[in-house]
Length: 120
Image (cartoon, rainbow, N blue to C red; front, side, top):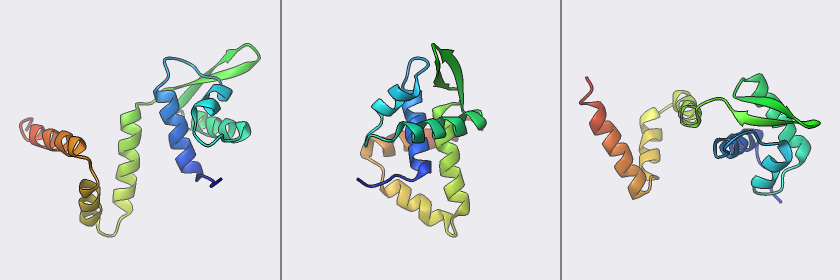
């Protein structure tokens, strides 16, 4: 079994919480993740997300349950911005990104870009 980077697991935990209707206990989050991550690892990720104020928790019985407090699309966009800002050649990164899009994703991006010109 290959190990994930903590940043990848953090993103996967955030995605699970984004798809939930309410608070989830750590064990349920583990059950929804691929690869059977250790409960303690997921709990550590949740504590880090709590410190970053990306999740909140509530007591459920003797344990805590968590839910997302941040906007998932904003979090994803911020990660993308971070990678783009660190690149030596941002244009090449954008080109690779666009070439990797599915036809539906490309159409959505095109519609957003064409629509943004009408707002100014």
